[in-house]
Amino acid sequence: MKLLENKVALITGASKGIGRSIAQRFVEEGAKVAFTFLSSVERGKSLEDELSSLGGEAKGFQSDASSSIQAEKLINDVISHFGQIDIIVNNAGITKDTLMLRMSEEDFDSVINTNLKSVFNTTKHAQRSMLKQRSGSIINISSIVGLKGNAGQANYAASKAGIIGFTKSVALELGSRGIRCNAVAPGFIETEMTSILDEKTVQSWRDAIPLKRGGKPEDVANACVYLGSDLSSYVSGQVLQVDGGLLT
Image (cartoon, rainbow, N blue to C red):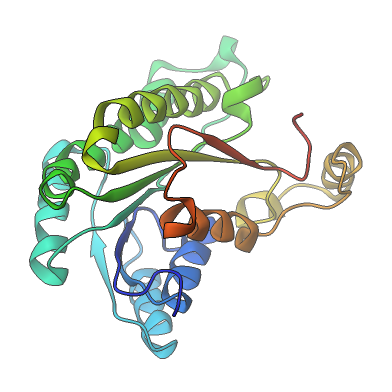
């Protein structure tokens, strides 16, 4: 039996990068997948077709998770289509990096809203359904930057640190009803976002990593499969670092 057989998963921000890989791995492990995309309808349709070609049942929803109204509609639409939600992966995120001296209020607010408020919105509106079924796994994508900080990323680090505090609070609040909540904190993962970096910068990252390589989106996806499955049925309130040993 596949690890996520008969489970319905909702993944936010899944049209590319880590989110796309999570959607692919979930389908491979037997989950029915609902996913969100914000602006690129073409990418959303492409992922929907790809997941269907893998033999899975998948549906994309255009939605802005930073909007409470849109998040509530999303949850209702997913339950209407699939009947339930067993796993949520709060993955939607952006960066607007600059030194704090030059960081605008808009740069700060937009990152906090997209990366942190979105996690609150999705979790808040989905919890009613999970409470009724007395089960669920909530997986929040944080970052090692949320654990150690990073110059030029005050907004991003604050959002990812906030996710960790939120995760631990939700684990305490909902645990008695069989709902687990964990965070995944990726390190240097090779995605479209990192492909724009020059080779010298990338090599300096690799040199600092004990495993001497960057991570792949699949490495994060595999951690999410574990946390979404019954293999982690006694794991809640934890932060799973997927960073090759970079932050020890």
